[in-house]
Length: 343
Image (cartoon, rainbow, N blue to C red; front, side, top):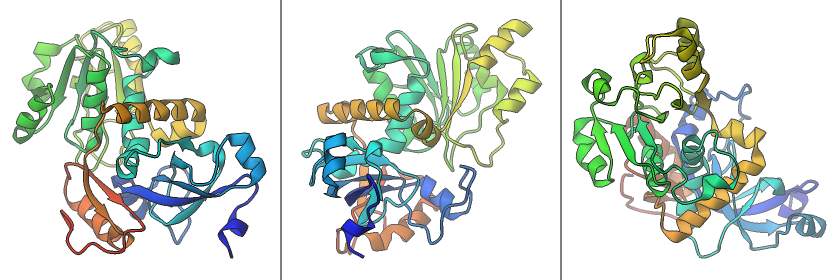
C-alpha cells in the first residue's frame, strides 16, 4: 500500500531522520518491557523519533498547525529505527529545521527524564526560568551509569543548583570534576556524615550499570524538604523497591515516625513513558523547552556514533556489554558506514 493509504484518521506519516539506539531497546528485545503488555512481534526498536512530516490530511494539517516537510519529534514505545512511521499528530513537537536531528533525537527519553526528575513538584512556567533551582543541593547516585547522569548535570547547572554531588567509580572522578561537580565514592558510608541532612534532591538514574540505592542514601535528604527520585523502571539489582522501603521504615537522619513518614512520602518513582501517557501536554511543553536549550547550546548531547539501519542489532549488542560515553543514533537513510567509532 502507498504511504498515504496507510495513514488512518488524523494519523501523520513521518519520514524518520534520526532515532536513538538505547538501553530501553535492549530491555524490550530481552522480553522485559514493563508497561503491562507485550510488544507486537515482529518488533521494530527505537523509542524516539525525529523526522519530517511526509503525509498529512488537509483537515489534520489545519487542526494541529502542521505542514508537509515540517520537522517534528516524539517519544514512542518502539518503531523509531525505521525510515517511515505513522503517529497521531497530538504526539508531535515542532523542531527548528536547523538543529542536528541526531542531537535532537537524544532529548525525548534521556533529557526529558532528567529535566522532569530535577523539577519534580515544580509547576507552571517557573520550571523554565534560569536559576529555577537556585541554592539547591543535588546528589546523583551513579552519575556515570549512562547518558542521563550527564544530562542531569547539564540541566542542574543551568537551573542554578548550588551544590551537585555525584557518586561514581574513582576512574571517572576527573571527568566529573571537569563538569563542575563534586565526586563521591560509590560506598555511601565514606561520605554520608559530610552531607547528612543537607541534600534537597537525590536522583538515581536507572540502567544496566546503575548503582543500587540503599536506605543509607535517604539520610542525605533534608528532613523536611528533601526528595528522592528513582528514575525509570528498575529491573534486577539489589536495591530495595520503594514500597518495601515504606513498609520497612529504615533508619534515617530523623528517627521519629512522623519525620520518617514525611521523607518517604516525598520519595518518588519516575517513568518517562508513564508521564508521556498521563501528562502529555506538560511533557510536550518540557520537550519544547529542551529544544530551546539545545538551540542555545545549554545542553549538548554527545553523539558518539551515527549508524545505518543494518548496524542497529550490533549496536544493541554493544550496549548490552559495556557503558558508552555518549549516544548511538540511527540515521535510517545512511546507506552504509564501513567503519564506525565502536562498530
